[in-house]
Length: 77
Image (cartoon, rainbow, N blue to C red; front, side, top):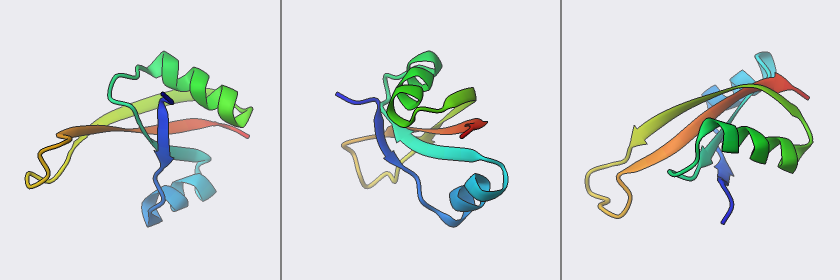
């Protein structure tokens, strides 16, 4: 099972990637910062400087998944 689920493509995430070289992904709930850093470096061949994570609560009507992790990667391509 892959740690990286999908990239987050929103106006804010696109603006961050263009101006600040910061990329956002949805990742597995069980992943930690070290595992995320290694997965991104292996998948994209870049050096990751910093990983920031946040737990985002989903809508209450959807009971299957309560939390999902999002990450912001700060690094150089």
